[in-house]
Length: 394
Image (tube, rainbow, N blue to C red; front, side):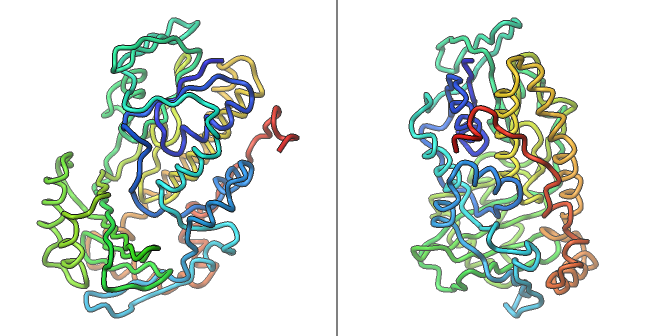
């Protein structure tokens, strides 16, 4: 089949990798003029790690990634108030790493080896599904026919709007925004340690990266409209955080010069179905669990692999689409439910929540406590389907 994938982040290239292995002719279209860079460091584990192993990319992910040795909460004076070792929660660091989202995307795309068509600087402007094929009109004016169209274009999916309806039917804003940017030669460094400072309404995180780079990550409670231009986004962060303690003012001073600046709402996408006709959604476009879940990229890979496997197992896309949703809906709904309860960890609403956050962090070194608190977030209750056309050839 001729398959158009909209979006060249994590989900899209993963789907392309598996679809081309089972003989489909794949095209990826990406709105950005080049493959994206920047973003923030993500934790990678669970069933997504299984997919990465099947793709043979784990060694390269380890080369580019990090294995953090400590998560440390500090107060406004920089003194430790709680800490734990990530491997206590993950049970083993052999199947866990942290990696820049852009690096994960790059490794996945490199694994495709040029076997699919890539269109940059364009996107889908209109879709016409007549039951036999989907006629796609690109924003550039070009028109082409495809057997299937898959929207892997993120939280603010254009494919979702065209095929399913406006964002407000499916998006739930969780009252928090997130921002990330990098700086070089920041004077404070704590190698392989995630330092976190939280107070009422926000959290600031500092991570030391390679090549003398430092990543700063902010989560901030915000009511009202979420700004869309960078100047207003930076202004919001300064207005809310410039008088806070720890190193926050120094971090904000570096924000304007940062080349890679990421800002977005913390939202979930909940839909009754991720497919309609010959159009399907994938990753955050279909069932974004939100930044709070901390596992969106790994889940996107699971979704992509599962959809490709079901398309390889059935010649009828309707059967494959139904199996795709049936396999993954319980897992993704569980992740979304779990994420809703994690807001206090990223931006406590009041002193009680701040106290509860720090108390739980002090206890996270105990495996049973970690499992009770984070169980649904750190365990993937899903069995990946076999991939009939390639499983024996790997």
